Image (cartoon, rainbow, N blue to C red; front, side, top):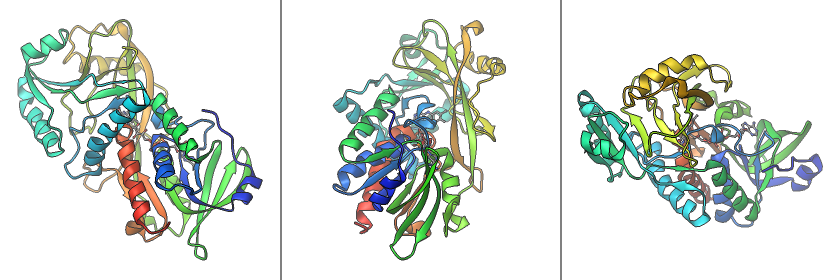
Length: 390
Ligand SMILES: Cc1cc2nc3c(=O)[nH]c(=O)nc-3n(C[C@H](O)[C@H](O)[C@H](O)COP(=O)(O)OP(=O)(O)OC[C@H]3O[C@@H](n4cnc5c(N)ncnc54)[C@H](O)[C@@H]3O)c2cc1C
């Protein structure tokens, strides 16, 4: 996935491109692929600061295709997860991207029954009607090593090879004419009042240069707020407050005791899904991610987390042998801070928010952003098409 960086003579020759997408994570890639077919013949450039696409959050997650059970009804997270999940399964089938719709259990004790029923009710609100309530006997049949009184069975949850997915998005975008510029960072943006566009200051492999664009899409993930701060003329009231929430993973060595994904009932106080067990396509079992607010983008995983993980896991897997737990990797969520401390939705800003024609900004694209990527791309692409800019 290595790509060329930009040269100043190229940007001078391009003068003004139609669309510039900042950030080649899964969201920027899905947007590039969708816009290439929605706006045929338009010049679209995708900027990525690293030498390859998808090096940040998009390659440090659980690779789960979420069904859409937990999100507030009416939220962008809920609608884009449900729509995105089906778009993603279709895309995987069409493109032969490795994935499995293996299903997940949310396991509970009798005193957590009310919480399980709340999840069931919420998922129905979100249009997910495939959930089934299981008793202890049915749980044992599916997962003999799991101890629980009740469970919700979600058959539409799955796993995906996210690297293969991103490679396919990139290939499609590039065959649709999108130009990917790696090792290229957006340093700053000035709104150009004469040309109704944006003047971008870029750094590409050590060289500073400028580029103009008509539409600017900020989908820079953990750096989206920094990119927004670099837009001269954007009022600070449109720049949300964000915090970094690290999620650490531990790997279970040896054969996985599970054949499905196993989640505890989430604890709303921690706004995570609890220490759950996921599987990758090779059958490797890992636990996490946990919730760790951090100041810096440091992905080191500390082995001191093992006892806490072990305690949580043993609530549903009492047979865990702690010596099989090993530190694995971590990812960082770009979580938006809400006034009342409630769970934040994805934030998609356009001219209706900040009155700047041609500027789209995506903030707080944490989980289920991978699942929702094609639906988010569809939503933003439709907004651009309907904006009358082209
Ligand atoms: C621990 C964890 C587990 C998760 N698990 C799941 C899951 O199982 N299922 C699911 O659906 N979702 C999951 N997610 C969420 C999912 O990973 C993200 O929503 C998704 O990857 C976000 O993609 P993105 O493109 O917005 O961000 P990123 O992947 O971070 O991409 C942004 C890109 O912008 C680039 N960039 C930044 N600033 C600049 C600049 N100035 N110039 C040029 N380029 C720039 C960065 O280098 C980066 O490549 C998880 C997230 C985390 C943290």
